[in-house]
Length: 199
Image 1 (spheres, helix red, strand yellow):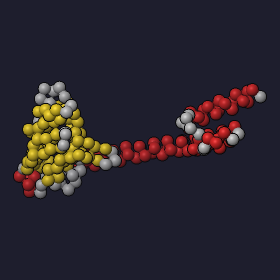
Image 2: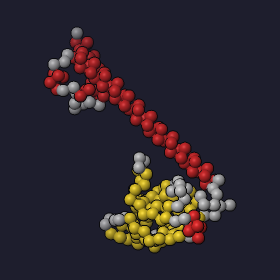
Image 3: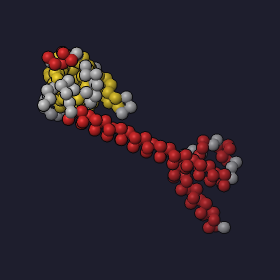
Image 4: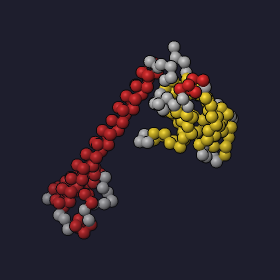
């Protein structure tokens, strides 16, 4: 009898850990109802909760894998586009002069040069002139080929945000275009861009 009770409690504790419900009742069962349930009913509730938690974990894993696969496909497409780029698909830019806000103070920052293919967004690192401070931002060349953005933030769900944009026609980008930009409490300076020639 004691062995049976011990086995029950071991299984009960295992289901507690698996379900992650160590501070509340499984299936959101009210305390009043929970106190009136038999041990067998409680065990069944934990088993059901564990199955739900397992399904949720598996669904999140599939979602993460789908995101990884989508990102890999996007990077592959961008790489192919770079390799097969035509004139107008690539833009090259310089941020200079440039100030970036580090720890609530504006500081002169080293110039940054970058190039982007249509639809590409990526992170860049800003360093002050003394290389004492470093922070990260994002740049993007929109698929329409008419907008280059310098941004504070990026998220997997919403893309870049808090941006300053350089807009221009293909002709303007071909001849070279520049603009004073500012992202509040983050960055201010000048960006100049033109279309990058391809072999």
